[in-house]
Length: 235
Image (cartoon, rainbow, N blue to C red; front, side, top):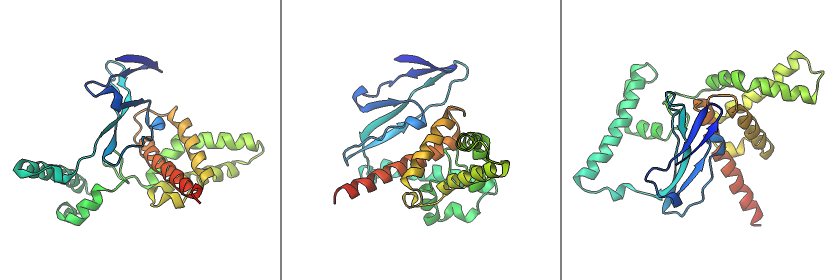
């Protein structure tokens, strides 16, 4: 087990009982590795909360594991386990019904439950990510850096111009709530978004939910762009 200091938090590198050959450590969402694995395997990404009492945080890990399928769970106990997982997700839906976010019918509509399970528009706490919540986060954490970069390019820019530039980039970030993002952003925009996210990651809390959500979207977008470029290279 190794440790290193990051600001005021000690990062702890500890794989526990995981086989070291199957573990890739990385520092935060911005450095999430893109592992290429065999079709029978999958990469599981593990992140950990900061222990505020001890001032420590376990370093994130990407773990290569065999991919499992529902067919691997047979018999009564296997069926009970899968049903228990469905019930756990239904419980999370009922909590949102109780909060007045969705209708009660959603909690017993199988098609809706499946769609909700694969919905990537929520953060890790189950909160809906909206254009409004992205705008609030952007203005608080990214806008200042965007304006500073704009001033470097044009020191004579008016306040109105700078605000319009910030709003334009805010709109760009809001597009992460959409679908088929590889058709929405150009390669230049993807590169710039990564630069802005990297700078922002040094300013916000390492456990910032919105940062993690946008980064996950951007990682998938970057992978899609690489795949598109790879196809172009084949002809």
